[in-house]
Length: 248
Length: 261
Image (cartoon, rainbow over all chains, first blue to last red; front, side, top):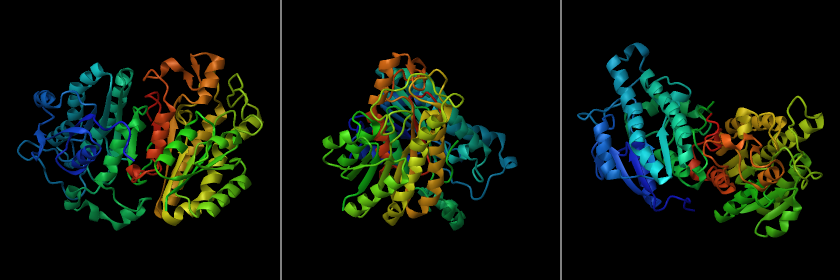
């Protein structure tokens, strides 16, 4: 059955060039949603923008107009730059003393400032239309902590949860819901390439569902939250991790 | 062969369970309705309706047995039976009792009945259905409440302290079962609704007026409205489908931003 409430809507998806973002775009298009896809990494059908830059975000609004669904996926444990738009993920764990102030600031900007700027640009337009669904991307790193990705990424994703709850309250009266999705171990091609998936058969076997997640598993939850099923869900952080961590 | 779903508490019109039944039928599933409210069975000819007192493990075992005898399988179990009143054969169609029943002033009978229907019943149904769900995999969805997150403020009408405790138990039960059944391909999740405009809410509001809801003052809901039965049922059904294939042990709050866990 197609999900109720998706067909004919407009979506803006950030971080749309690869991985989870690309999969969300594909799912939306299958559901008949009109998608504007943006990323710092160029690609077919991608509106290129550096969302840490407020000017770029403003320019993007010219292309995206007023979306019904705003899906903030842009981010990652290694911050991209305009020169290196799809940086390689590091192997192994990142320790506290290995995080430079520059890296700290860049990762916070790439994961948290981006969501703030994009929400600030588009939420007022949604308010005027009295409809909106905003989904921000947190991470299991913010929920249970992480043994791998570093404090900057976990802190930025924790920030996403605070931003989400606050915007949920602020925008509720305007019929705009704001939620976060906290993915667990999702084996995107980039993550597989970095060898993260090889870290342990034992780890996978410790997950109640006994498998790594797929980008499709996240796209399904995005679709659910944008459909009728998400109409009264706001301020929530949805853990999608195969049972790795159950939330607070 | 089409999938088989059991919905407890699906017979009363204008209830979350009733709408879940309608939507699972639309998904192409065969639906068994397990309920004490036999008055509703006549209008549900597309379903197999079984009289069942979910607070009685013998009655639950019989219901599961009948289901398996007729369909040979169980793919989905949605536990919707619940509430602080209108939950036993004796008070099934009575009006809500007025006055707040907290943990310090409820009767022991209140405690036993409310915990039995809201928590024990979920345990009985899940346990009885588990061997069949495990055969081919499937999904369980339990219905908790925002009350499990924040308690019921004294002065509220239509809900109770024991209910808040039992619903918190349902969240714990959901996590425990997720661990036990996940390796067998059975996902176990939970929704925690805030105030939903079901027939039951309407009956409370008819007695108490608009301001005092079962979870505290209605004016404090940030979205400025109660949720609809449609929204809540759509969420429950989504948790039964592959869209949520990588979610288990999770409680999804659906409360109009009134409590962010």
